[in-house]
Image (cartoon, rainbow, N blue to C red):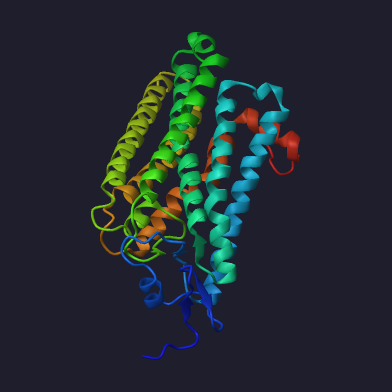
Length: 344
């Protein structure tokens, strides 16, 4: 059967080159170049739409989200670095959180924007490996760090007389180092076990970035059991961190309810509840994405869930963790001017 000239033909190295104006390989060519057990040389990421106007809209929306996350987190880093009054354990952890948020969103969003702008869905095999490792590193480091932040607030509010002893510089350094080390180990484990499998289901990743559950859909039957077990362990670890966070805030709220001043109660509720909401969004959506079995058809829900746990938290965290903080707001006023952050 004759093949139309607009399709891509596999080269000797297994890559695809256009013979006309098309920028993507056809489904049949993609599958035929991928025999059982063959190592992929590149993957195709899922686009948000094939309509050019919607592709541009996706680019603009992601650009706005990315710039908001970039500006918010950079402002926090600058304010804490320049104001010595903020050199305390709480802001030390907040700086670490901002670094993680910047890293996580920078790993996946610019690539997705570039693909929409250029009408391409390609990502190299090495690029996919790097994206999986780096995103998992930043994302899985964030949860134990949020647990450490909740513990810091618990000690400050519930055990204030012991705060300086329990949260000295050495203790803060150990907590932060433990969070970063757990992220490296977890990311290395998942990345190694994911890309050790053989891919038999083509190269079309049904997600806008290289996400492990969607990559496992492409694995040969029976070859992804090791990574599935690792995911189950990581989900249990994430849920354990979430339980500790909820328990810390529950103890904080119980202590706050004993405060006779209504203003103090209102301030604590307005601070703790948004924190819990963002953590719940991150843990809940990520757990849905990773607990869902790799078999079965992909849907638009997978795309929405991925956006909720990978793109939204880095944008919301700066506002949630800083805009209700009087000390940080004062430092930001000095940094960017009082007109942008008026007193309430």
